[in-house]
Length: 207
Image 1 (cartoon, rainbow, N blue to C red):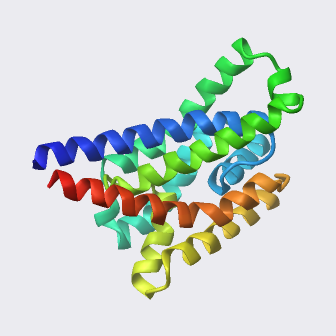
Image 2 (image 1 turned 180 degrees about the vertical axis):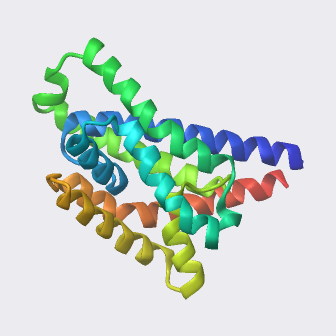
């Protein structure tokens, strides 16, 4: 049973991470907004000329410092996988989309809105699945978890505050705030909690 539970966690973690990378590329192409981490990192990418994947590795390496000090129990395979795979998966998918999907799909209505809505929902699900796999959190995601556990404040409130803080960094770096980023700032925290409850029931069934 323990082995089945471990396989379940690793499968959830990897599927969540690759899902986030894939659907992030569609959110970026649709242009209506991304999650707050990607907004900050894509703004820094545009400012510096570095690829999104490289910028995400760099910023997460900085956030790893407080995680090493106060949140070492949150470090696991998912920590490294998140840091290294999401951005570069998105870069790869964007390259493939540019080559094989007509630009009109991302520019003309109603296709553009449909792409955004579908990618938004699937990105939220992927993020929640990854965070609730308990296989290690990325440094970016560990910050609100650590603050919540040390202060007793509800996670979803801390997560929303954290999302707005990094959004401000993205704006300062020259990013243009859009509706999608605002929606994700309000919905990531509640989505993580809701899907987490379902995943815990599944994990208990495997115990």
